[in-house]
Length: 301
Image (cartoon, rainbow, N blue to C red; front, side):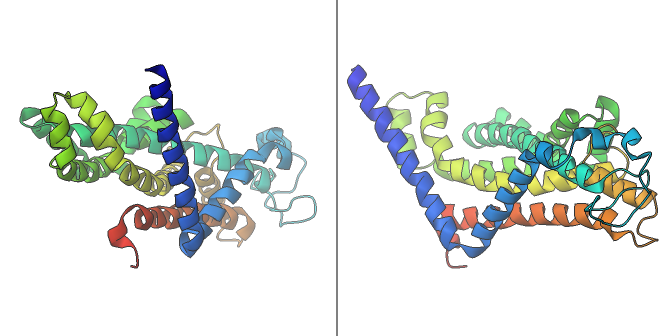
């Protein structure tokens, strides 16, 4: 019995490995998706290499006391300095870690909540489904940015808290998409066969329904990340971000409050703006490519 279990597990992992490399092959032939993957690789390496590019002590206000304020790019400061003489490149590279962490962790929170709600609301019937749909409708109707601002002010402004707040206010759309897919999978013959053989609801959801919606969850997750990063940038730009942690949104807030746009200090506001645009574009292109790969009906569009 143990040998047969090992053989089954080996077959499952082999199938998953072949599916993973199959997706990579499809991405290689999808130009927008491949470009998005390359951009994400660049930003990921850029964030990981932060200690090699700039010392974290350059983020302190005291580090700029002997430097010129709003100095243009030079050999010493490749991206110039801010209004108190700090190196903009150091803030940009360390800020990439905060922005990516918030975007990815917020997506994880949103995907977990949205997947659980969508699976249960789609598979269950009666009052349970009705209550979950009512909660989902509430989060769909309420503007998520004002709600995120209120929660950030009440709960705190640390990167972890901001990620949880953004994820908690961004799951409703995912839940509705997953529920729609579960409703179709629930009527499939193999699901009805498993129920007829005595399989419980948890077994059916875990072994039959969840694998069917997993591609949709993965593709949708790549589209939630840019929304989370934009939300964090908006909160930081409006002054509701963490004052002690650098981020691209905080850089834009500092550029706006210092009047760098008025005096044309482009090195202060242009790099973080381009980084936000680049990461959002990369996740969007990759997400659309994954949608085309996982959904045969979208291929060729």
